Image (tube, rainbow, N blue to C red; front, side):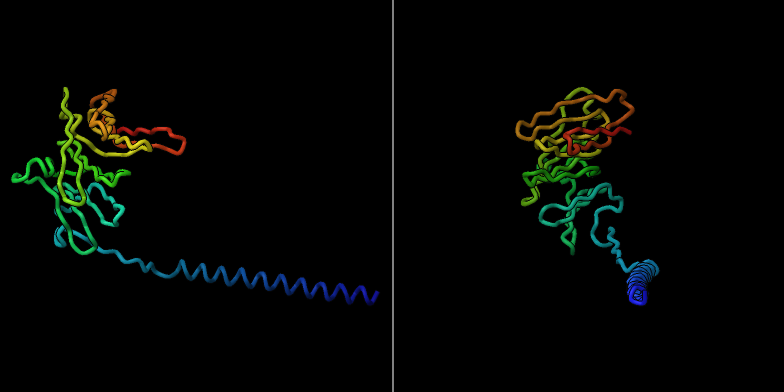
Length: 208
């Protein structure tokens, strides 16, 4: 009996020690977590505006390309930011065929071939050569073309096809053949806003 009591006493002390140690760990973790929550955020925010060289303070879209450059589409031009200064792309009467046709940039996309695509409010799709800065305009010529060239976003699917969202409806563009396929919106007053291809290869289309 004495041996059993001694054994039970040792087991109880051991169990108590394990339990007390577990609570100590939990308490330390809890205190550390509480301190992390209680501490003020240390994140730093930098504000970039026209004072820093941005062409316009109304930014509609943002993209980071494979080289790490930041691109900002604004209400008055496209801006390339290298971390220090801005390079601005706008309409240029001296280079009408190599510059933007409209300055209100609403959507950006970098495709699998490293090409930069830009859609504008009134002039449709533009392709930008990131090395030279030259711009190639790809307008849609059709009935109600002002609706189709009033584009809101651009997206590349897994097959390398570009999908453009516009006030006229959804647009499929094949860069290799420069071919547009138009899918009119059921109601002209309801523009297509954005699209997305999920992992099951389903295509999602959002309207206003």
